[in-house]
Image (cartoon, rainbow, N blue to C red; front, side, top):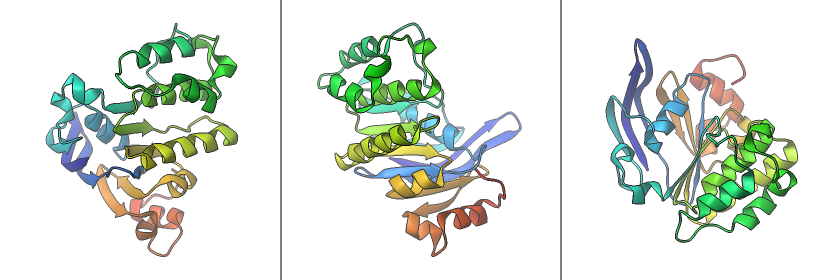
Length: 233
């Protein structure tokens, strides 16, 4: 996928100001940046949930804003707030979603790997934040997507589950998917990223491998120098 010269304004707020970056199949691309950098806005445009004011986005060779149902079936999305129906139970939801795909993932294997069986009988509205994160990730993966967007996928997860999620994300990329992860975690970016994009003030301020972006410093030091921010992201 390719993002080229994206702009997006909300009233007087310029959320995106010429953003450019790419993400390749078989790689995890991590978007790192402070709050308000434009990460989520950029990803929502790439998902087809928003449109840009100017510039272009190509996902699987298509403008996602005008994408067909066939295109959308090849894209998995995990939103920052989960976006899950509240009254359904996890297993019923995942099996329902699997019916929309010709060759879905093994739902029971996903449920087991993410320990969803532990709360399978509880409705989504009664789940903890971390439990909802796991269900949302499974829902994004159930269609075996060619492109996978994950907005802060490990927020609220305990260290054990976080490691399991990292392994699942890395495996999805190894199997050929283009995976885009937004994060505030240096550890997550260092652990996952084959390709790293740092955004600040609605622009791309660095892009490359983590080593290239760090330039001989720690990623944390390079990040603060590039974003001109002193607080922890």
